[in-house]
Amino acid sequence: MDTAYMYAHELIVSEDITNKKTGYRIILSPEFRHTLHPDTLNQYYTDYKNLLEAYFDDNPNEQALLQESLYNYKLHERERLKEHAANERLRWIIAGIVILALIASSIMLFIKNRDKATIIQLRENLDSLQKLKSQLPPPVEPPAMDSLSDADSTEPDTINNEPALREKLRDELMALYEQSKLQKVSPVILNSNIYFQINGLISEGKHIDDETFDELKRTVLQASPKFIDNLKILTQNKLTELDLQTALLIKCGFRPSEMTVLFARSNGAIIYRRNTLATKVFGHTESVDVVNGIIRLL
Image 1: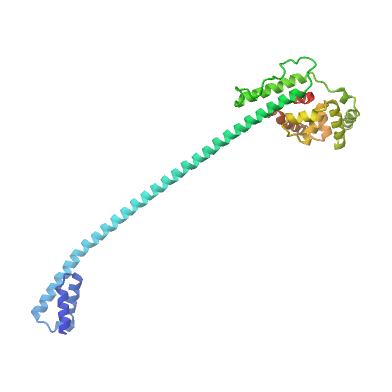
Image 2: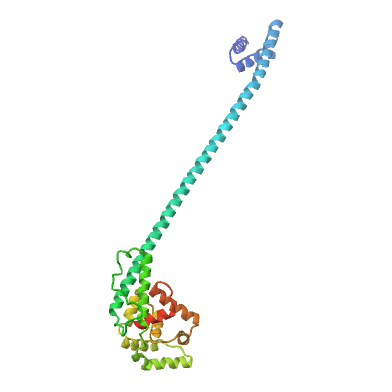
């Protein structure tokens, strides 16, 4: 019992308020209360009362400090989250700018390569026209316009200038067309059996077959041995069998209305075929007269 009393007294005189409260509870417990002198017991009650009052007086201050600390922590956390969100937005903005820059660079590179490819194609078309010109027979009479220029299609002022190259190509093609106005359908074709046979098919409303086209091809090549070769030059070797069949009929002077019968197709389909052939020659659609004239010249 004395040992417990001494332990409780040591707790009371300690600096820690929790230890003091424990010590007072031990001494004021029923086990020790009857052993104490009434004056001493009263003193312990008074001291314990003062200790509790002091503790509860300090407790609101501690709560206030805790609340202030919690508020400061929340405020700091909000600021941290706000800063994190701002940094995240900045990263997304930078990433967006980089992506847009890459897209813009890709578009510029694509346009540059496309323009370069277009210029190369235009030069090849001009070279093909020069080659075609050298293989065509000279006109019987001077054309209404100047004939094809002998100037190199890659002059310094036009070599990398797309509009100038297009203009020169059109001038060369139109010169060919003017020259073609003097070109009539060859008598070899007009007097051939296959020509009369095809006219018979038109009169009877029948379409032309592959065998008839083969015979027509042989007849055209008798009149113009280099017709197909020249046509391939003019179309940059993009000539299909359908293109060739259309060109053979044009070479022989057959009109679009007659082709609708021979091909058993609508007038719109025939126009589409002729436009396709014109695009391969000119790089764009051209009038029917110009396309017919240049093909008749080959």
